[in-house]
Image (cartoon, rainbow, N blue to C red):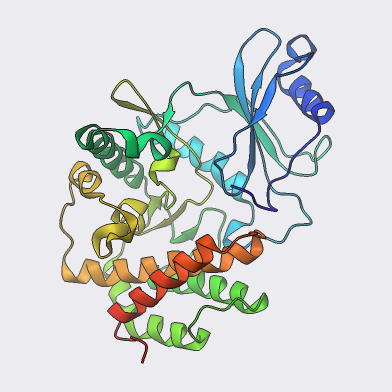
Length: 328
């Protein structure tokens, strides 16, 4: 996926970064020792073969001159923090961090190295798998995601703060940040921004049922799941985590719309196959938040085609109809 947030570096710079992380004797030479992993949407990631044959991945944050959405500020620090939390408090398989550098001395952004995971990306191979095999992976993912959600927070909101005493205040602030981002870049939603604000205010009381902040991955789609031999061997990309309501997880998005696929196996694995009406009310707000981001981020990332924008606009219209705001 192409995006102006991808902070590509020259081979010479990559070698300098490798030397700092692994030592001069492991710096690769010759040709063909690096390739870009192209399926990510935000950071650039390189697959690298060191001189001794070991394979690693280098992930680099966006360049400082590229404007990102408010919730994406400090995303790499959030990912590193989340990885620490998951390793310390769960049995969920996540990549190790070999080396992280926030000095900006060799590169104009934060970066870190981790071992290459020799496995398949479920988001890439999922449609080719027999339905039962894909469901088995999603069921495992649901159980793993529930374990992640067991990690408590001291307050609601971003890991780096600010923290809020209630989920209503945190989620309202998060959504307002997204709307302000859209207004600043004059992104056309197909709906007046103040209509969205009024809708959120009208339904915000449903958020008060959430009283315990829990670690939420939020971006745990199948494309961030690595699988091999019938097992989930790693969960990757943890840069959008926050403390909030576990029902905001990606696996629950399809509970009221088929546009996001069939995730019933995930919900079985999680142990939450059916949502109550009150939970569905919250879940619709969370899908609204997601679709707003999917529309607005296309401008921030400089997409050169309108595929994501058009799809997200269509889904936003359909969701607004569920809120009683059908067009015409």
